[in-house]
Length: 520
Image 1 (cartoon, one colour):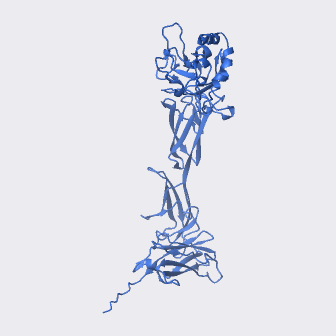
Image 2 (image 1 turned 90 degrees about the vertical axis):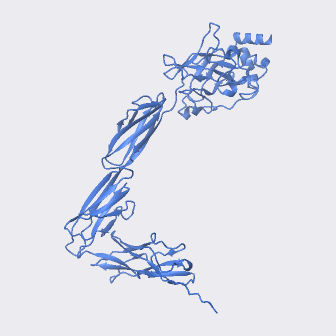
Image 3 (image 1 turned 180 degrees about the vertical axis):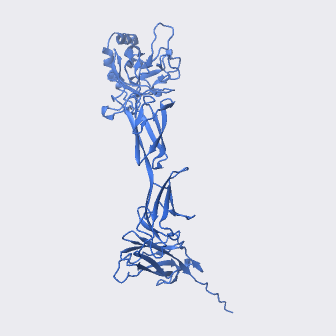
């Protein structure tokens, strides 16, 4: 009798609904979902309970439009389309789409024994392109705590179970309803929430606020000047095939599946370029991405002329950018010298090129060929002519003694030491200062070995020559092999003008095994 009376009041007025709000909320408030991850916005309307909010953000793509506690509803745009999240009514509280609230044993008889959480039936679109929403949502206020578990006594809720149906499940009457998703990204139609909610009209609610995404890649990322690269863009939730444009023009996109798109375009790269693309979203916003493409460039030029006499050295300078490997070839020679494009000396440095004989033609052409990384790498070539000098040229040489350097007992009895003297020798009036360095990376020294720095590390011309410098190699005595010679230790002198010379030295050991005496 009480239930009947309460339901009559729900039909005829709003008073008891407001009176029961405190009772509905007494069980606590469930945790709401973060609104920035939801794509439904706007309000549904009920003449019984007023406005029901889909999201605490007016635009989920913009956090500055959000206010209050985070909540919202996510409506997938592909199958299976299960709707998740929470709506908010200032009169009856949270309304949940989650399974824990909806799919419970106390499901209404009209549901056929199972209340499936509401879902967009993308697998069966209507002929006009619209998609029906099927299933249920439920008001959390009917639960004792949160939005799941035991429900309140019917006397407390007026007999209302809190269920809201999005489509007509009863075929024996003349009433029919359905909520639909329209291709325009909005909703239409009403859900039924029994006597408390009544008809809940979703017309005008926006559901397709998915932010577009994009990624732009280039292959290869390093090309020769005016070489080609392929730009590939992958995107989602964009407007159409012409939604993406960049500083290279428009890429015609192809739909690959659902909301996913891709497109390619081959472009010619004249110089280092950052390519960018911007894609317009299917319903809101835009997305941008970029890709860098470097141009490999090899520059080679002669510096003065080949030394004279004799004409044995070609002085060259080169500059290499964005290359994986380079080779330098002398005119008429069948052998190439590898140039390390990552070397701080090779890039922009001046060097004597002396590996392939004399400058026997006047002039002699040298060619630098560099290659980009990857299979089918592109190449760039630069050439320079070197003439024989008509007059002697100022120069210097580096000599290291002794070579090889013998290991001898050091001040520490557990250590063997080789001491080297480095001399800078001026040629034809050379007087620039010279910096000295030692590199033992290829010497294959035993573990625990130490190579000192050259002292002094820089020498200046005194008017009569250059002061000598020294360095030592120390090896643990127990690690010194018998009759052993190390790999090359490279000693380099570089002038302030960028000229450099080097000499390789080695360490040697003639240590013999001590004889074993047996006393009889």
